[in-house]
Length: 189
Image (cartoon, rainbow, N blue to C red; front, side):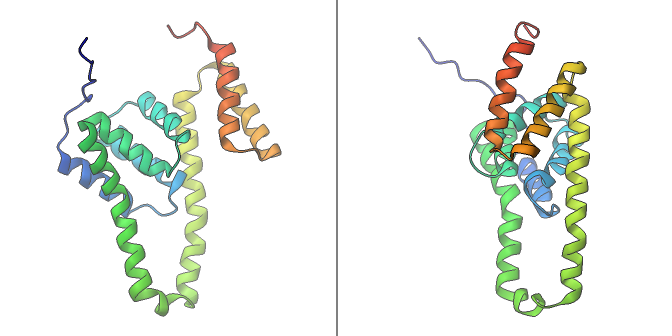
């Protein structure tokens, strides 16, 4: 029996995938969750490579994978667009700017700026901006993902549980999945 190979959803050029994720990687401070609104803006709203729902599904999948959220998301989106090569372009694009910037800072600028009060002040100002970006992404995703009162209540309960217990995020995901199995089973056939 021949194997069924799933075709990528869209055919986008490899250079376009690379350049898009280079842009994302180059202009995002904070990594992790701070990069999500930038990725969402580029791949969902501007390029329309994936829908809001597919983007949310990608985030759910990448949350359960080891490694960086931005890297795993870029790989998943790249694979959807152009298969393995698309995933490689997404990975290179999102990581290359950070690697280059870190190497440049370490080699050239760090000795000059490590004690500079102005540079330190800028970085202290960027921190709240990163939190604001994460909150904005959470709000935007919540509007798209949370359907009905049960979804809102489950989200709030899991948030409170995560904050109060400080358990590992994977346990929160597992708990949400188990509760969702009972709450939503049969609703989405």
